[in-house]
Amino acid sequence: MKTKILLLFLILHSSIITIQAQQLYSTQQGDLAISITDHDTIRLMVSNEMLLTLDYETSKISLKVGYETFRTQIDSRDAKLRAMKGTYLEYTGKLGISINTRNYGPQKYNMEGVLTTGNTPVTLQGNGSMTCMPAGDYATPACMLLVSLQTTLSVLHLNHIFTGAEDGVRIDVRQSILKKIGD
Image 1 (cartoon, rainbow, N blue to C red):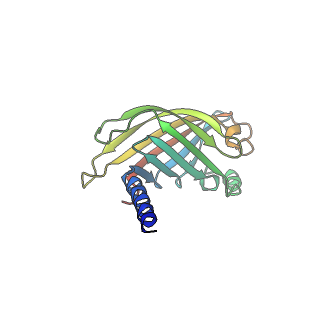
Image 2: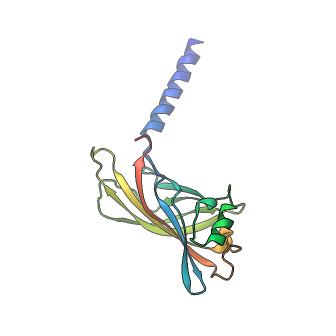
């Protein structure tokens, strides 16, 4: 019995060490903007309530934002977006670089992942850059991540809100300062 308890303790202890060693960073201060061409005018749909996580060891990225948090500055469209409460734009993917937090110049990358905005996941490719800065304690870097993805209003299930707009849209994650989870 003591052997089983000791074995269980060792397994749990090694799992905790693995979790603590992971370089997982996140932000809730970043913003996500969707650019829509509507009758020769570029309209922005912006949310400042995005959750983004990035694993610096594997370069895996995940972001999630609720449709009800987006604003267009057009009352009728904003009301339709608020009515989409509980519906999310989610993206999981992998940056095409090994992240180097000691490189303080822009690190450009391509990426591929899966966008989910309902029942049908869609593979999307994008690109961007990451710029890291030494933190005040010189131990934990803070990095700014810029991401750009191309998709369509129909994939995002937004064509009923932007009737008459071009189907092609661009999603941009802008000015996200990533900090280590737990800091």
